[in-house]
Amino acid sequence: MMYNIEKIISKNEIVGEELEFLLEERESNKIEFLLIDVREEYEFQQKHILGVDNLIPMSQFFNKISEIENQKDKLVVVQCKLGGRSSQAQRQLKVMGFSKVINLAGGISEYKGKTS
Image 1: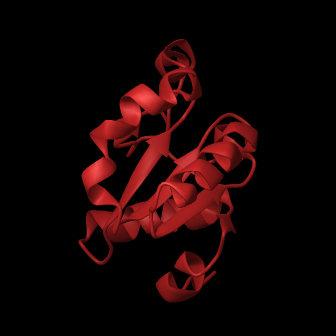
Image 2: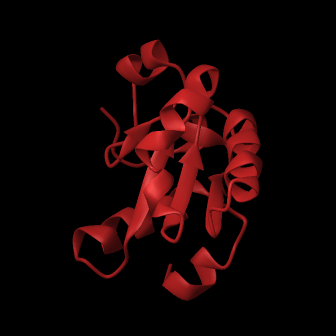
C-alpha cells in the first residue's frame, strides 16, 4: 500500500498502519512530529509503541503538558490504549492552541508495529 504523507496528516484520526508509515518517514527525516502516549506510567511500562516522544498521562495532563508547550506549531500524534483518552487529549491540545493534533484510532491495542 502506498501512503501519502500529506493525505495522512490532513486527517483527524489515523490507523496503526499509517502511524507506522509516519514513524518510518520520521526515521529518514522526511517528516517531523511528536508521538505522545497519554496512558498511565504502569501501562507504558508494560508495553509501548517504539517512537513515543513523551509520556503525558491523562491523570497528570495539565502538570506534564508543559514538557511540550513550546512546540505548538509541530504536528502531534496522540495515542492511548483504545483511542478514547487520546481523543480527549486531542481536543484539549487543540483548545490549548496546538495547531495540528491527530488521534491514533484503536490506540496501541490495534497497533501492529514495533512495540517494547
